[in-house]
Length: 179
Image 1 (cartoon, rainbow, N blue to C red):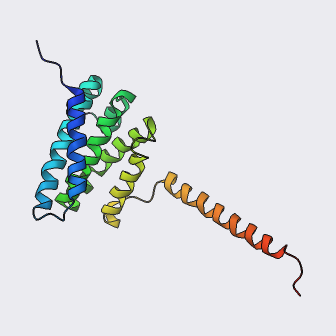
Image 2 (cartoon, rainbow, N blue to C red; image 1 turned 90 degrees about the vertical axis):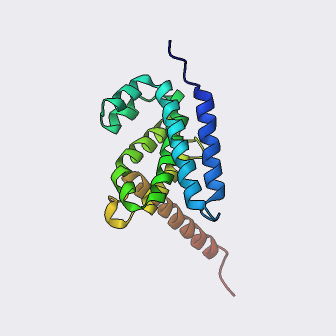
Image 3 (cartoon, rainbow, N blue to C red; image 1 turned 90 degrees about the horizontal axis):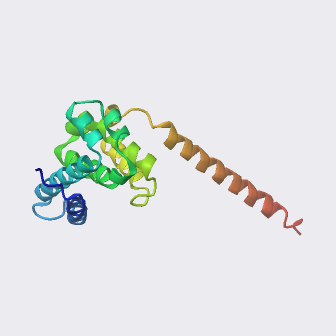
């Protein structure tokens, strides 16, 4: 009989590795090597955790199905390990350079998109923040145009700001005639 995968332990280990490489950054003498080691281990631990929690998704991944099909089979229970794998894999790829990041950007976007769909508040909107990091790390030619959701959000913010300045302008003119 196969021993059950210790999902909680793998998720906790992935969290700890993520915290370690995010705190250390690249400032340490061996910062890049430590980041690569911790990010790779974190992605492996998290990947094993969500695969144990979502066996249908793991089977689809093993059958080399498109990432959209794989993540569609991941449920809310496995969302944190999926998020950790995406975050850690992205950090590992950023340490490798542009080419690996460009080659896997679509998979990372699918993973983070599923996390945002299932748990938008996880890690204080971490999926959206990580998508932003992903887009900022990619060269302009390696990244498609800004997603409509992000550009729509910017348009709403811009409209709110313009309404606010219009209110301030009206409010200041209603103070009465000047002497």
